[in-house]
Length: 390
Image (cartoon, rainbow, N blue to C red; front, side):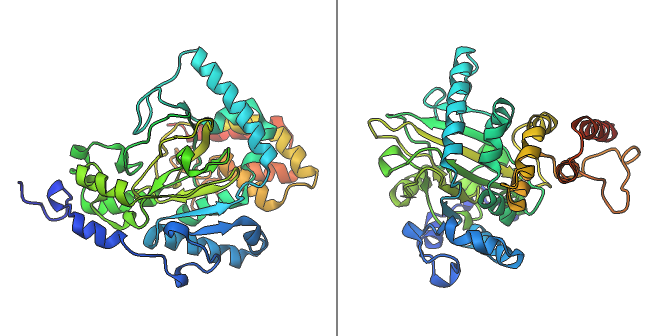
């Protein structure tokens, strides 16, 4: 066996006993202030208990700080019951997603899947943009979700980049293999071994994994299998491919039943895998979120200008109706528009009155609040995009 090189992770550095010592612990009461529940070591929050604290900026930050500690140093995963309480919006989105699945199957556009056999389930790539352009009113109701926004901001800070992918596992659908996720989780073991150890630490800080349940998910339907605390094992991007680690995962993983509207969020370095759907009649649908830091590269390309165009008129109507809070408006805009100023062409797009040029996200919110005309807004956005080109 090749001796391990200091500063790099290799198969030789992976120690199952060390791994088990890290993961075989329990969530402690002082780790969770805003909930008292952690079944199977998964902290579970009720959004109806958080809605009022969220209206206070300091309390909202306290909750987000707790979630960040869980993701980084604690169990690595938490759930929010009733994160999306508008079940009608979920049902409407489910209807649109099923139509998209049927259409894409008819066009023979089905492709490979991550960590599962292609064709064993239904997948919609870029379900974020596809829902926005197909049914903008439904998209607004669905993504104007302060709980999701706060979870994303807790791990990644503001101006994160939302992407989403619908996954439907039908009765009889097989489980995934245990794995870690994007970025290093989507590289081969050989490639991972070429990245220095500190990059293995950096990778999970750039992405948040999550999702909203589109149906009730009892254990028989195969909700995600999780191994709490496993994100703490630093060589894990190498170790998860080893058979002994995968066997340990299968023997010690936990599952949390979810109800429609519940959300689950976890550190992408957490060992996890979709479970087997052994139910006779549940078509398990979840809208998976892969959210990226403003400072990283998202997995999917998203046409955010097209999304802004699609959503602007109904968003203005929703805001002017008085039925949308500013937290909901901010959540919707964060999911939709580009929130970061870079990369850009600083010759054509210099900072004005600060260190960074204005963002698409800023333009969109100002336009909604000022009731700006659509033609004027999108002229500004097109000019902004042109200035950013080389």
